[in-house]
Length: 182
Image (cartoon, rainbow, N blue to C red):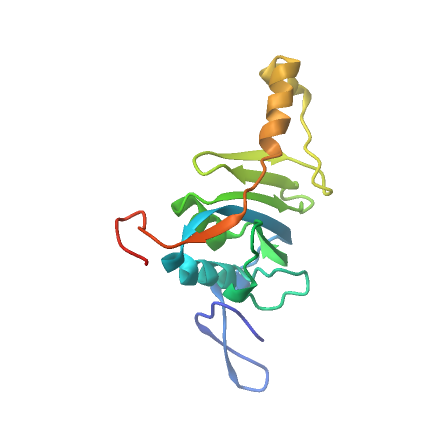
């Protein structure tokens, strides 16, 4: 058994000891997930970003090749994906983005009987969840229409769901806590 972000041990049938990730030990509903993130990130936080990506098992392709910081795109958002993601969330990546005001849009497929597909957008300040189809088309219910109250509000809701994620830009300079990352 191979695991990223290894914690704990498990004995295989042949008696060998194998590291075990606690999320892999937990029974969880698992689905495919994509996330696009962007904004301005101090260079000193690159290792922390890489750790978050690796801990969540995300990759720049569906084959799941291990992420390396050298794969950061130039002049575009970072797009990551994975299959079999517990509860449809990239916990470490999303928390890293919230902590560092990076903008993200995540899509997660649904798990019948547990939860439906969703799109979550974080604009650097606020996070909003939208109901979507398995093809990532935003859906609104009759109750949503009544709550929103007007065509203009409905259009604004769709616009918020279609958040444009800016490129991920790595900068030298001052960290949010005042430290120097030069």
